[in-house]
Length: 261
Image (cartoon, rainbow, N blue to C red; front, side, top):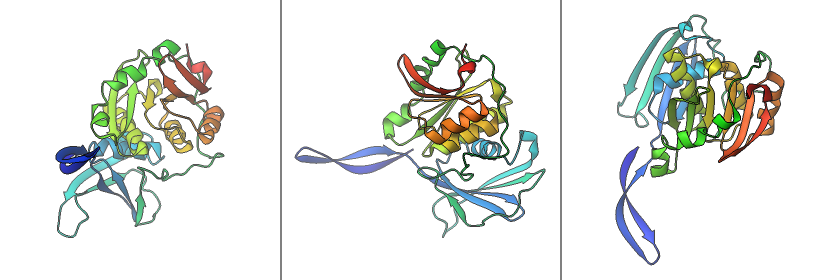
């Protein structure tokens, strides 16, 4: 966050004040083989984002698939603000991609843009994971970690829980896809078993979020907001647990009843 000077107008008057605003930065990710992609995101937890993004987009299956990781900050004159440059070497480099692709994930679409009949996904093995009463606790536990949303009104959050439920990670970003990838990256870098976690997100659950969860092996995704039809279709086809409108003592279960105790 950055503190800046503003003028606050209220009623008939105005006054000079300071305000906290969410910060956005540019990440340039290079994987070799002519593959490069740029992202607009909140400039923190960069390594977690990169690892989570590569897993959720199908470039890697485990952290060991990344041979080397190098991160640098470019503040040279002529650059569009601070640019974080990350070079990653993979065991299996991807095919050459668009060198100028810019991912505006704060309000855009996930790079993979999965179709409803996506190939390459494997159905999850259903098993009891979490009690409905435990799901009721997620918004309350998450609210304690969302202070910066209260200060700026600008962030999406993704929270990683175990079935207890115990909070394992809380991350924020100006983009809901970025926040989701950061949560996945935290688990990957910490050696957590993603197959035993629940992701609670403050954003709506669209098909690309469901796709990311399935790619990463996350069994259940919950949100205080809506689940879109594309996400529900993917969830029902591949056994992903999908919970929407999780507020107070109620929620909608769209898919994955067998994940509930």
